[in-house]
Image 1 (cartoon, helix red, strand yellow):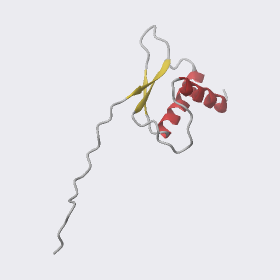
Image 2 (image 1 turned 180 degrees about the vertical axis):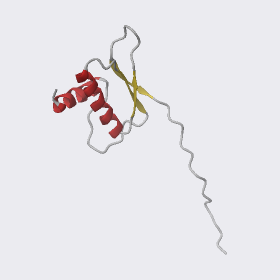
Image 3 (image 1 turned 30 degrees about the horizontal axis):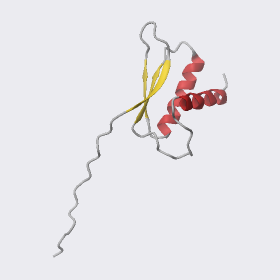
Length: 98
């Protein structure tokens, strides 16, 4: 098992899921969650899922790993998560100095 080959497959999997490759340092996956359902029976698939999770975390997304139900196959999917608007601390606009 080659780590580089697994990385190529992980990037290809993310592209198929609609996550296009971006320049390094971009946090363009905020508000997205990668759901990985893996049974752990195939170590190569687990390696690809792990690399995909690292890529998504570096780009600002969150990752959830779950076990499949009986008879369910392993898969990955991207879902949008609703983010609550961040409350800004109130600052007075005009202060009088004494």
